[in-house]
Length: 288
Ligand SMILES: Nc1ncnc2c1ncn2[C@@H]1O[C@H](COP(=O)(O)OP(=O)(O)OP(=O)(O)O)[C@@H](O)[C@H]1O
Ligand SMILES: [Mg+2]
Image: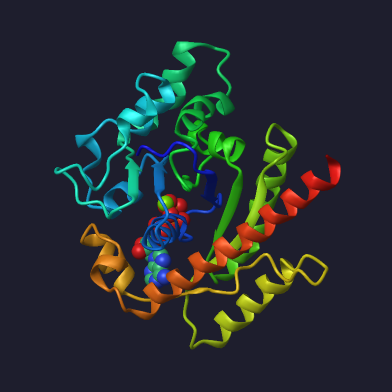
């Protein structure tokens, strides 16, 4: 990690609803971007440490996001990489793992000072990591604990994870309210990058109609199209299998349809970012 001049995008992956593919998407989008040659860091902010285990990393064996958030360790010292012999992370995909003790983070921070705001706890660590990565992904938990709130308040971009289940779709409004709240209460620059629909059984009529519903509900009213990513991720048992093995599909099922879908999705994400960032540059030129 000697190139300190990368443009780092911090992307939170979230949804207040549990079990809608946040972790699976975080891990596989990050893995696909690493395959494309990008340098990527995942910070696991969930006390259930599913992203950590997804890479076969034993959660209690390493210091990680707890120490980072409490401010006991420099973020850079907590990063696990491909070069660490104790773990088998893919190349260019780094991880700050989570552990069960994240459960106690709210109390630990309150003990440190009554005045710590959730936003602060990620600001310094992220500032110290910016420039070293193309992407930093924040895998969030489905509860409003400090790490989750911190992610909403510190991210540049937000990827909303959803599954085509009627209850999950009904919950999308609440998810959007959370993003709007974060924008209004401290992170005005947060950009919804898009909505990923995953676990889609592409053979069923219900999946099709729910997918169309999300597509139109997230249409932005102009030619720009829908916030829903064009690429959705199919439902397949290879996902729970590969998770159990502590690997990603890129290691276990490199040519599987779902793996291919994640590759396509990563391409779409980079295209969308390039579009947003070139608009930004044009604005800067126009104003200045
Ligand atoms: N495309 C898919 N096909 C089949 N199963 C999937 C797919 N994506 C995710 N799953 C399964 O759905 C479950 C929930 O996925 P995941 O853990 O990624 O969701 P989450 O939103 O991170 O959950 P939590 O809110 O608990 O953190 C997991 O058991 C996972 O194996
Ligand atoms: Mg999760």
